[in-house]
Image 1 (cartoon, rainbow, N blue to C red):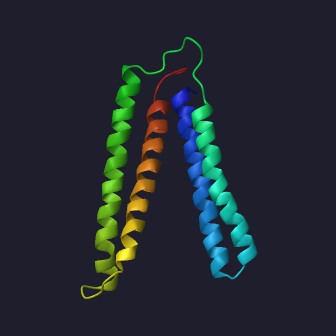
Image 2 (cartoon, rainbow, N blue to C red):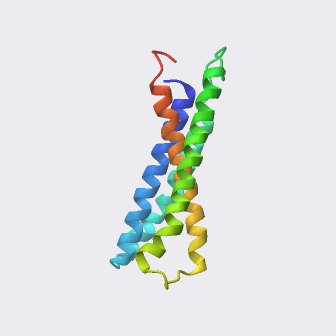
Image 3 (tube, rainbow, N blue to C red):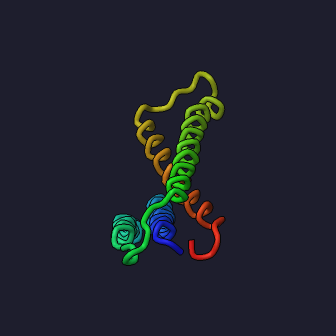
Length: 142
């Protein structure tokens, strides 16, 4: 497993755990278990920080090639895939309220930043999953 794979796995696992804890915190808040919800929100703040520290602490091996043509191609393909997924998310999120609520319905403007955050999360997930899939297609020790 090379450095890029380790970094992608660290961020992907911390994002997944953060989303899982956030959903659990919101669910417990709705169920009026506030003390546990507040405790989970603390971990929602800590887990991404740990993932970021792991991401930046992974150092390359001495004398190893950090980035070659294959890595550039994988990065380019991952960026294209992730931007396509983010664009698809924005399209679905834009048209879904009209289909679900009807033509005459409206949604509050305060939902728009949530759509942007959702697109960012979709972009990050798609990027790191695409990195892991593309590196997984390579041979041994690549």
